[in-house]
Image 1 (cartoon, one colour):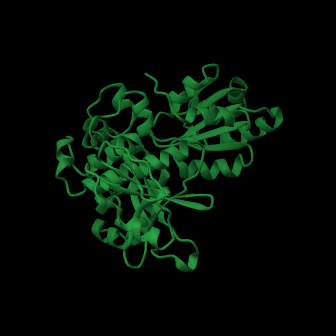
Image 2 (spheres, helix red, strand yellow; image 1 turned 180 degrees about the vertical axis):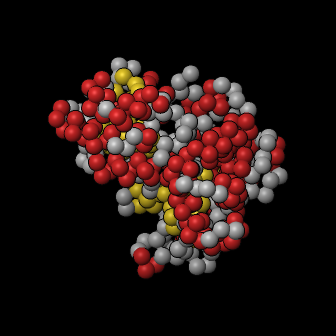
Image 3 (spheres, one colour; image 1 turned 90 degrees about the vertical axis):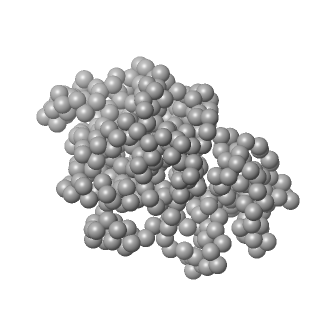
Length: 385
């Protein structure tokens, strides 16, 4: 089953401008499905397949004779040496839309892609389903707890898989295969403990020293592991907003997962009801909304413009987006009732001239929408973002 993905439009557009388009994103987020459906007249070859991989490694020129143009090459990070042959071939033929490459490891892939295919490829980031994609496909869970627990991987919805089972095997495959490939992580038990500790810190300032101590590893190892999780699209960091470097108010970024279903699994949650009284429910809800804003950027081919705000008096606003010269602000509250208390930090920043009411909203757990005016911020229901 194929869901309409927001990304389709942008990928099609990039194919009319570049000889190669490189699509990255975590495993199972729907890259191959999207591309096969979007480009039915393209050949498809996966380098996960051992025979294809050997052909590409041992006889790259022969391989590119078979796949001379209009081809989707999946999991290109398996044969990075193929990239320089693609580069020569693309330069010789010089047409748009010759190849679409996909990969689920940003780190290895991006280093080789940006060196080898500089100027010849557009880079595009995919992620699991966004709230609006689920809404349009009529598969958006009815309650917040259900959505937090189920997460947003297409396969769970396609095949009605129990989320706990899905994430358990996802996690094993991810850790045992991918992490080892990227960074040679030998202490798998320690790494599993580390990623679970990360899940317990969603929506918090990232304190690497404290995290390393809790995981009983060195700080350099913790830093290395955080970047492994980031480059394989498991977690991302949200940077603090500052108008100029001198006024940088908090140095540390906040930590979020791309998918709340995986975070819930790592926290030991096995059904939606577990979330109702869970101490991290607010943080998981905040994670859901922040990652959804990030997906909306990525799917239209844009980079992140997301920040959070916190000053020395601990006045904090969960999400700031920077659109050219002006800022939009979003407070994220899991509560279902519109509460004037939700507005207090935004009001302070409006009074100080940092924000304008009409650019501020509360994304909350309720179902009534109120537009922002120049008098006061608006309210956006979680299922309408």
